[in-house]
Length: 387
Ligand code: FAD
Ligand code: UDP
Image 1 (cartoon, rainbow, N blue to C red):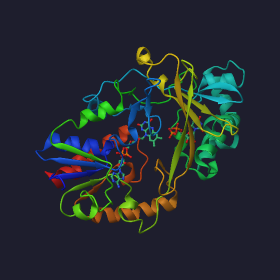
Image 2: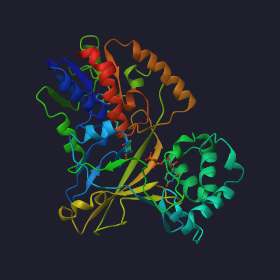
Image 3: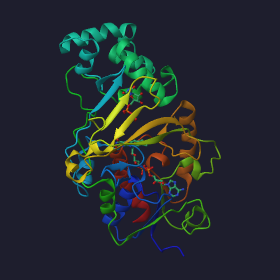
């Protein structure tokens, strides 16, 4: 028997959790959340590893960062954040360099002691013909930003492993996410606030929905008509917030939107610390994975509770996703964009269903962006439908 709830949310990821929390805060309605997975939190879910004490981010490393004050105030209602600042190193030809490219990277690479102005002049020379073009793709953008030698060393092969697509066919925006700095600041993000949830992602998410008016059923598929919370039974009878894949909702009738996925290989070492940093990128093509994550090192403040003799590392392999894989990064070719526009039009016609989140809107969102979009969706779409 289905629970009697005023609203059903498909997906216990951040979009679903934020909208549930907002409904409870602003109305007297009840909410039921379902998820096909056995846990809440969507892709930001994490668990504690018994052997090492590391907090493992099950779907890949998640670092919280934002410059949006409303989002920062909102998340701080449910969790404290550590003072973690994200820094990444990259291995190239058996040598370790700081990433993103900064004056430290440049001087180490050229065995030099350039000042900021000297380095800037050098990079402009090395950008050559690309220095003054309006970059049309990742290849041109990369060469323009850091010149050809650094681009070839740190970007070309890494991007090849990550996207399996020629950089000249990838959008320039992918690489504009990374800062380039002519000083020694090697912070990975440019945002005002960053940190990791003090007692882990899952504890944060549990507090967001800790209310008797929110109920959750895990391990159920919205498209499985043998269970009560299915599309056929619910759509048209109760407001639904759907955060699964938009093409799947419509039975892929117009075609499939394309995604990339990541496979992880776990390694365990009888050491306190394997890399000395949480993230080591591999810039060269002889190492088949893009990067390796040493989870213990995200939380140095937990050293006392971690095993001093063991550590766990996940190596990341990137590839195109098939329909049964976890969709992680929207590829967003022109064909994908056109197809999504068609699905979006259909979604707008669907009676009392709101599509949200990265799968429901085919968008690459960081956590702070999905939280922001859910707060806005609550005001503009959810409140008028449910209140
Ligand atoms: P999701 O978290 O995907 O939630 C959707 C939920 O819907 C899932 O739990 C899914 O199981 C469920 N669902 C789907 N179909 C069905 C169905 N048929 N029936 C029932 N349930 C269903 N963001 C950052 O801010 N910092 C980072 O460092 C960062 N790193 C990332 C690294 C990787 C590898 C990836 C993939 C993402 C990363 N992100 C990061 C982005 C972050 O994961 C997302 O912004 C956020 O999790 C999106 O939330 P969501 O609710 O939109 O989607
Ligand atoms: N990138 C690279 N070398 C690196 C790190 C990043 O070439 O050492 C490029 C790569 O194309 C990647 C993009 O920069 O897709 C964005 O990097 P980011 O770390 O933001 O990727 P994500 O977190 O999405 O995996």
